[in-house]
Length: 257
Image (cartoon, rainbow, N blue to C red):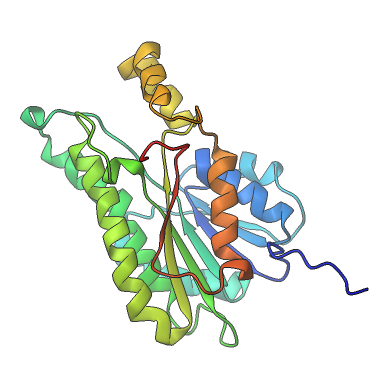
């Protein structure tokens, strides 16, 4: 009887994850390590990266305190990472932030920051990881960017955040075509409202409990959790999705339905 093969097995793969200090990024690192991957954790807060690392399985993981908004430095930095950690098989761009602000109160500095972190940083990562010195020469590369249903469904006060996430999904379709000849797949995951530290902070400091509950009530399957999104990320990184590129995989408990 043939051995049963786990299509989500990531043994032997090296995956870089940005936003690894909290939320979806942190949970993705934990899950990917459980599936056998060697994970490169990236975020600004070193103390939180260490906490993520302590929750992971296996050995050979590395962490880097790097500000992904330093987009002009990303390509050179990525070469250094590849020298220290070996060629990269996949990346997850989960670093991001949100801001709720009516257009009449538009703050151009906040808008620039959101665009830098939520969109430009991901583009810089894709640009950097396609370098031949960085990716594995004998295999494909999977890129997964984290978007949001905010880019597909209007909600007051989220125009700039929605624009940054809509840009991600638009770029994915172009990058998938452009990079297919290099055996690089590019997809995004589109989460609905997920119970993360960012949402909890928003609830406590901005919106209040009732507002966040109202947001979760818009999801027919109820509140989402980081693991719901991490499972989708792992699928798109694995060989189980080898024939999928240019797709925005919605993981939203039915919100967009």
